[in-house]
Image (cartoon, rainbow, N blue to C red):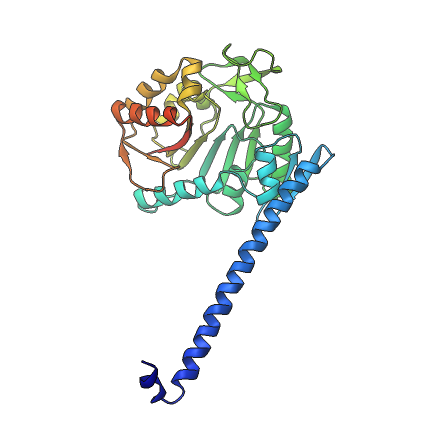
Length: 309
């Protein structure tokens, strides 16, 4: 091959130049990756050393004010700038493919925390607007601040409430170190945890007047999913794309596991996708398939997020 190349004017130098370019490109990519990795780890370490109550997560896309006592969502937003939004993007890609380009315009973010889903969903143009529900006063305060910080306060409607089967009052059990793990108290949680009273409303009370609007529902409520869906029967009749966190352990602790399985099986949804899986294969919704998924998760003490279509 070398002898053949020597016969072609300029061939050898061209090959050498191409190799140099390739080597330089690989080196540049490695340096960029290591720089980002170093930056992420430095930010994580810096977050753990902060002695202030709040910190500003300043990244290329969205900015967030976070609480330094929140060692999960707050820490990740500070160190890398996002939390779980890659799942939302994946869900939207699947929805786009399955629904022939018919995209949701309105996001319902139930258990919105401080905005890691609804804010980038709006700022990056995935939806035109959002309605966010967050019952914890501390999280809700930061949710409002972060909508202003990202200039979407007029596009995200925020409600300081929990959603459930009936309107009323509930006790919210607070997790001091993971502010995304606050749970509606059902008597099964750690009784020593601090609890606060929060208002509860039905999802259907917030349906928009526009009957033609396309929506997407995103639920992350730490085992209270069955109660939220029980208050959303009219909304679910629209068969909008629905994503919820599926944690069999929490659902069983609340005594709502079988209710949720039956509810989904009897709904108008026909297939689901496990957003933690690398596959985009859509599985038919049957009790058998859902029980098998739950068993697999329980064996690994894990959870996932499910997209229903």
